[in-house]
Image (tube, rainbow over all chains, first blue to last red; front, side, top):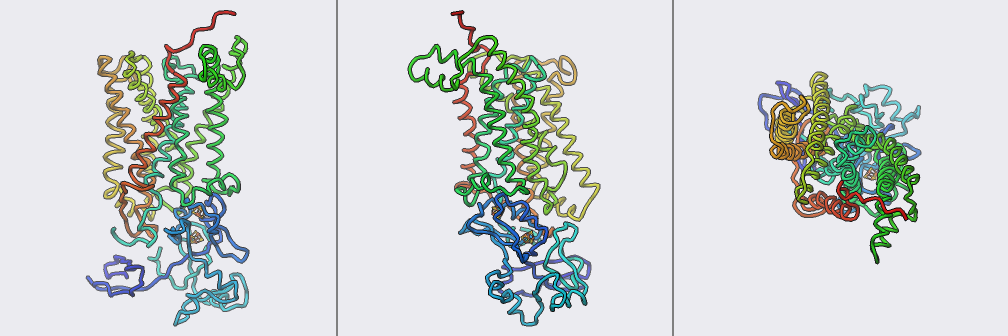
Length: 166
Length: 395
Ligand code: SF4
Ligand code: SF4
């Protein structure tokens, strides 16, 4: 939310599991919006670069995954991801992240978040393909990525992203 | 907590143990560089600490990777770093830098330096001790002048290789942090350089502490020529180190990038005690002033004449403060980095635990352990000048 005086307020109480209660209004609201963030499956992924044993890798089809059998749990990748997309599994003691539902992709399905989104706000497809819905969407919308100055080349694109989003 | 942080930033992934790791490694590099001063640049005054500095470096080097290991989620898989390293990873390559330094530089240099002692002790001793020292000689028991001359030359060459290696060792640790572009608090080309000079500072201070304390405990007289020289070096190293840090600081302030707001909040709030009070004032400015006044760094006899006993105490106090300061540097780098969100919109807090693998007790153990190892090393290989073994009678 951006207040009328330009101050930005960001919140996701309890990870958003219990919904989003209205923020107490002080001095009026300029704009409000909602930005879901996930692993960007960066083409030049810092997390892949820093992993000392190569447990984090990019699949041939472009997803960035962690091999849980291989990860030594050093946490370097958690530090290196500019998007805060990685977390540490307190039980398995390895790094975890969004996999684009790789188990579903392998069966030819789309990621669960794409499938269940009631307004079809999410589109999934092969990047670089010329004639899929994703390609059409990318062509006809103004597209941004997060933190472009870090040159991570994200594969998650946002349309009409607010300038305040980092 | 304050502002917005990502859910995964609530808990700090790198904790106290990771603070220890650059701290200990820095002591190694610093102690070694001090030792090289005596050897390569023939600084006669600091010779009494030459062997002590080498043994200190060894003791701390043995312990340095342990906190890292203890911190891993799966320490049992750590050998994979050597078997299947990712060549692009700064951390993976550190394993090799470390191994090179331990095996090729430090152990070899100590061995060449002590070989004559080992041989003489093996000759004198009886029973298992004899065998122990004999084993340490690795079977080469020739101590003719020619052989010793070779030892000396070899040791010299190793030191010459060792200096860049020590630079590499700690510069590399700085690189592990400085190369993380995701984090504006770390990402800086100056990081390795700052790490290096702070390492030299901490190493000299450590050897100074150990030297003074150990000498007093042994009931011997502190060689003030040596202590003065160490204090002088400490002063110079601190001046360089502090200027570099200020340079980094001014540079950031002037560039004033997107992250400046959250970083200044960080410094004014969460890091105020550890950065301003401990690191800058107590850890740097206070010892700098004291050393400047009493040590011969600025003028030949010291700016103020102070009796030796008092000077000794001041040196000791300064060196201890410097350790506090350097530890704070490492703390501010490692913990400070994780206190603000990568969304640059909020700050979190760090709560150290007392028990457990990442706790204070464990960290304390890792700090004490090198001193125990050092004590053992000193027992086996006395580094003191008066223990120099006399040349054996010609047979
Ligand atoms: S968003 Fe983070 S975790 Fe995902 S690929 Fe990029 S750097 Fe790696
Ligand atoms: S935590 Fe695991 S995946 Fe991440 S860098 Fe370390 S070994 Fe690689």
